[in-house]
Image (cartoon, rainbow, N blue to C red; front, side, top):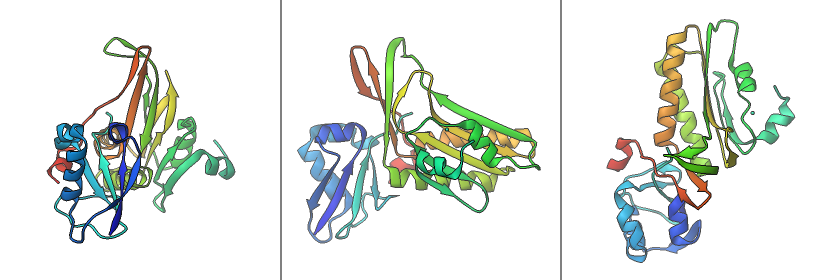
Length: 245
């Protein structure tokens, strides 16, 4: 039987391709597939403790069996845009909007935080917190030219919605938006935005902080940093609970 294996970040560079169709025996497990790549690519073995596996866009235990047609993803450590409806449709690669008013999206266009605040804010809200992560011009004193972000898009948008809805259910907030930009970003541009509205300021601040912290450790998004003298995939870290899979 055949499965499709996807690679992201530095793993894509190691394999030399973003995906492969792989023939595996009946009863094969995720761990068996992963071990096959460890044998083919020694660098996989060195990174084994920090790689997380997903099956059909869900984090999965390595002992899980696979079935014909499954989509298997090898995920290295994650790295730590007022417009009318037509404009919005073109702006976002993928988005999830729900009846509660929450909003989650991926985009290759500049993030418009003013539009996001207008989208979420209601008359009963007394606070709006807008966190934006921006591209800085250096890393540990090494001059940065620009960044590029990529992600496992279908899984990332689902994880962003899951995180946002969980936060909304455990904090006294009204609505939350999580938006991440992909592709090339210049110095000073916004790469990620978390916007929270609430009746009062404290839960809005707490929810926004939790939103960015969880997004950075659970959503499959990777960053490559470009310098004058080279480039590197930035290694962050997964949430500890994912590494026990």
